[in-house]
Amino acid sequence: MLLVGVLAFGAYWVVRLQGNLTKSPLSAGNKTEGAVDESRGRMQILVLGSDSRDGANAQYGSADDSTGYGKSDVMMLLDIAEDNKHVSVISFPRDLLVDIPKCKDQTTGTEYPAREGVMINEAMSEAGIGCAVDTVNKLTGLEVDHFMMADFTAVKELSNTVGGVEVCISDAVYDPDSRLRLPAGTSTVQGEQALSFLRTRHAFADGGDLGRIKAQQGFLSSLARKLKADGTLSNPAKMLEIADVVTKNLTIDDGLASIPTLLTVGNRLKDIDVGKIAFVAVPTVPAVIDSNRLQMAEPAASQLFAAMRNNVDLTDPTAPNDSAEPSASAEPTPTESAPAYDKSLQPVRVANGSGVPARSQEIMQALIAGGFTQLDQLAARPVATTAVYFGPEFADVAADVAALLGIPATQVLPASGVQGVQVYLGSDFASGTPTQEPAVDLPEGIVNQTAGDTVCQQANPALITR
Image 1 (cartoon, rainbow, N blue to C red):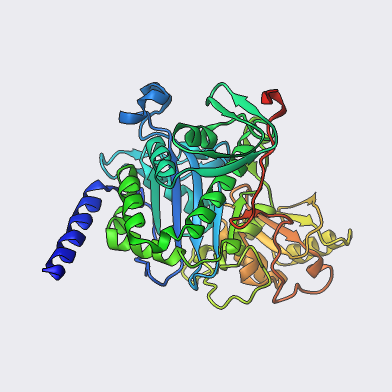
Image 2: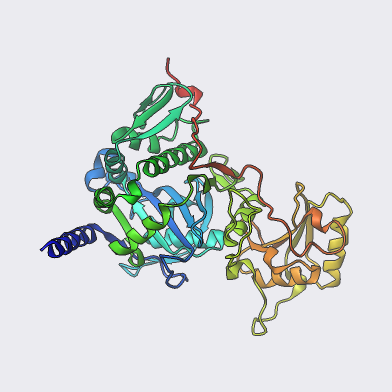
């Protein structure tokens, strides 16, 4: 009788939780990775926060405030290492201008053309969540395995279920747009106040998106510490309660849409040291075409994505890494069947960060001798490691340029902001050929914080109250 009771209880919860789930295709018609081993394989999950005003979310605005499938108010890439020893959480600012690939709505069959210089939060508005996944794949050179999208209600109910989350701010602040009101110092937020903390665009730093990202990362860090300290991830009863709340307000891809799979992912996270959960924001600068928008800062963004493709522990880039599996896009190699191209017509720029002024001319002479004559050069800040960056459709040209100069294929990287090919010279290429096994070259201070850090957010001076 006891066994029957246990089985019935388990069956009830599986059916209940499974019935809560809403599913959507992983891709919008572009290439996606094959099945991943959720229990042991390296896994990348795109986490999205929808601004949809449907149903219970109508109180936050009218339908006009969110078009089509809605936009992504939050976009984070959760990267779980194969050995479960480190996790990276990469935030993409909603104002980041990117190129969105051609996408097909898998429900209606409607195809949407590729777009250039569009805010990343618009990627899913026409063709659905799969188009956001395809956009991140194109931008990073990675292949996302799964996605999870939550709405406003999910944030409120989860924060209530865990008993609130501690946050900290430097000064008392009030944001009339999000209705966030907090005193200086540490507060516990839940429900509407937790949602306001995550949604506010103006309360932190200079009132921009990067300040909001740091606040969101601080909130998630605090939540991770709380779940760890309370033993929630090891408590089946509490996990069922949280799962019931979350799954009611969650949209996930077909491959993740089973309760055993979700529990497997949760089980992997429970033993990870909070000090090994790195929160990072994609390096950006004000966009050239619109100073109110952002574009990726190069070479810093490409260095970050290259490190991720190689499964580097961002909290300790020098740590041994035996499970690096660079994607095909990170190591383009020409094939014998590839159509020939005219080298003299291919645009190649030389950016000299080697510290040796004359090095640009030496490299340009080598390129001319190799048949590349459409050359240009530009000033560049010093970097340690040489790289060859390439724009869309120039992977084969970049591979040939790298081979001509003796630059390893692992240092040939896609970069959305590059037109043609750019050879970025580092100090390792001040003479001769570059080091074949370069040290990991990551931008200084790339990690905003780890989940083990308690960080107090800087209030926006314009909204400080007395």
